[in-house]
Amino acid sequence: MCKKIFIAATGQQCGKTTTSIALLHMARKKYRRVGFMKPLGPKPTMFRGRWVDQDAALLARIYDLKDDLDYMSPVVLKPNSTRQILDRRISADDLEGQVLQAARELERRCDLLIIEGAGHSGVGSVIGLNNARMARLLDAPILMVTDAGIGRVIDNVHLNMALLRQEQADLRMLLINKLLPDKRQQTMGYLQQAFTDQPFRVVAGFDFSPVLANPTLKHIAQLLDVTLKGEQNAGPRIINHVQLGAASTQRVHDLLEDSSLLIVTSTRNELLVTLAALYNISDYRDKIAGLVIPGLIPISKVTQQILDRSQIPYMRAKSFSSAEVFSAIANDVAKIDAEDRQKITLLQSLAETELDFQAIDETF
Image (cartoon, rainbow, N blue to C red; front, side, top):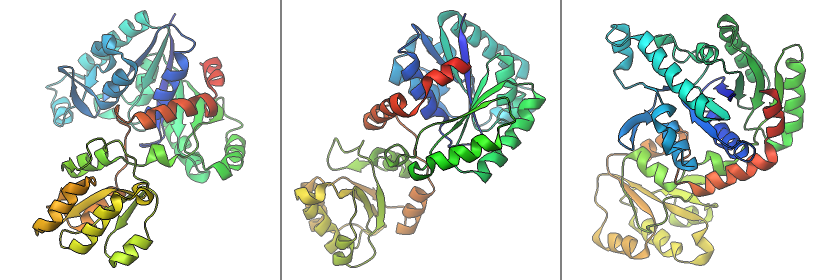
């Protein structure tokens, strides 16, 4: 008989996918055949000749689940899917049937099936398949992931619980994620106290990790839809700080922090040349992750030659201002990519030390 765990969340960016990656890593140490399913996929991508959700493609790549790919992402919502469903050009009953058929096949193949929801409990209501109902439909008990905090977490959990109760879904565990290490014990104490009268367990998840949270150079290039130039293997480098190169060259130099991405407009020739030179000094290689160069005015010919010769990673964002680049990066939430080996390796390592898999396994 296949054990199932439905990974839900109180909202977006709580860490559902990182939790799924971690659980699969730990489960594969105990179970012979572990599967993954994203029944409702709001983020379509083309992978191996078929449309699947981005998270399904990610898990398939990390854990080589290509044999299950036909069943991992049964319903993928395209940009016009919502209107087609409301216009009754797509049958909600047919979509439900696709989910059930895929789930039955994965249950037949697997000893443990990780089912990842989409967003908060109400996501999917437009087609009658919100996360709460989906979990009930698939007869899968819920592990709900939430980010850290106290009052906000309690409010969000109760808000989601209303729909879970309405759908008679089985919430068995609350996993508190992105905990601040110095507040971990205090936060968990208050949350366990707040939910002491509830039938579910409250357990600690991962501490907040800048490595997992921060973007890579490749991600920034994709975010801005520009090409990453310079050092060819720099794409997976993690950016810890973003700095606007608006001050004097000396001041920018003095403010350099570990693995900084600098936003320097195309007219700042002196600063661009200085940073290109510093990049090839070992003491600065850890500080300078790369450059984003916004602005319509062309880079001078000499400066361009120096940039190219230095191999400093840079992106030319002609259609952006410095403020627009900074805002886009500040408002973005970086998702893990299958090529982010440093992040994936760290996450799997943390799963073995910070995640109580035995408690999760015993609860489901």
